[in-house]
Image (cartoon, rainbow, N blue to C red):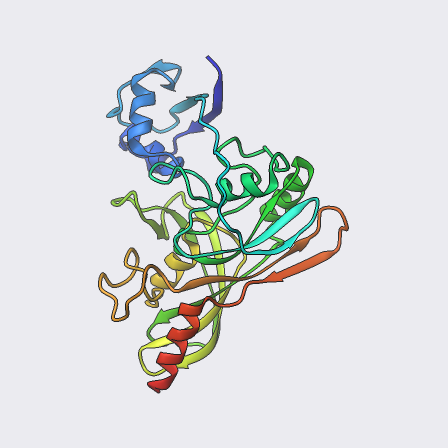
Length: 310
């Protein structure tokens, strides 16, 4: 059997007594606990080179070997979906993603994605580094987040941009409307972010064994006594980073029912969050380039309503 992922983990004193499946769901936050349990049952996860059950209690210094089997995945299909193209050349394509559009196919969203649209528009000119379900996709934004993203047309460009993402040298600025006033005109939020210990659909700040995450924010406008218009600059790019970080300081993004209030006073469909600016070193010219996506109509309209109430 071929394996797509192999890793050895050493349990520490702080892990002693934790269930094996729970330990791995924390360490491997992108993998579901049910999938981990299946791999334990199938003998693809060993403790000290022995098969154990999912409920095995971790001991200090245990060596856990994780082998996840290679699974053939269906290829994304080209679909004639209009793209709002900001810029395009032989190496990259930069688009303004609309609300409700998923970046690449996933369970529940196997069509109608950015990847499907790119396959139709670019034909065979997309990088294959991230597999057949994510052709050309270097990074992603949430389904209900709008704004600028870049895809790559060849593997060399993909590797070049991926390295910049890894080094946190890419400029990524988002605009958002958040609940409540911020105490400072600008600031920095730094914490770990990892899978929520009780709710697997959510991420959480301050999670033990999470990944270090840094968000810089700046007030753009105070909107009456209930909301604030802000810009956020990402130094790192974790799942739901801005949404989690702003909620962690008492300023959840407006419309975000996952991390904020369950009910929204406005007729919104998802969080008011927009990827405004994306800048990076171009893979061929080696010069810094920067692209902007204008605020979507609903965002501008909401700003007008809130400003009128001041």
